[in-house]
Length: 194
Ligand SMILES: [Fe+2]
Ligand SMILES: [Fe+2]
View (cartoon, rainbow, N blue to C red):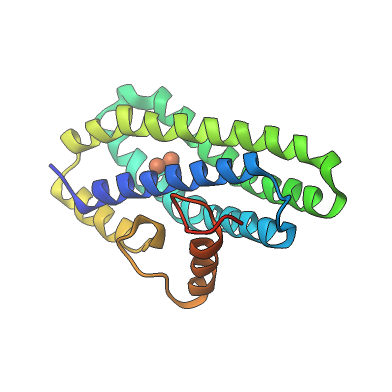
């Protein structure tokens, strides 16, 4: 069975892969040309990750998707335990990255390597995490979940309305944040060079 929720989960993963790639390009480039714009852009990108993937995407996997898949396919217990642990860890890690970034911005280059290392780890583990969900969980979910499960999951994931997927406009308090990212972030997320 295919569902809107499955499509949204894959689109949100794709959006986050693109965001992490764009952030890595920015981190590699460094703040030389326009530090104020550079750091503002990286902060906006981290805030996006905190507000959308961390606050909306992951909790719905942990609370709604994984338990339903496990109920019908308990063999996935160890994979789900690992992925749930990732969710708990990255939620804290993104806040830690924001602190490390502000340290680099306000205390100078001496604090750059610690941010770079933490971001590289975060990015690599996140990419592994999404690959694991797509390879180990979603194909099983497609087979074992019921129409009622999908109706609930479709409603839940449709409510995320993550503008970075390209499926929804940036609205309300997020309008300025996404305009800033679109203008200042490098390709493929935006058109800027920050
Ligand atoms: Fe996840
Ligand atoms: Fe996910």
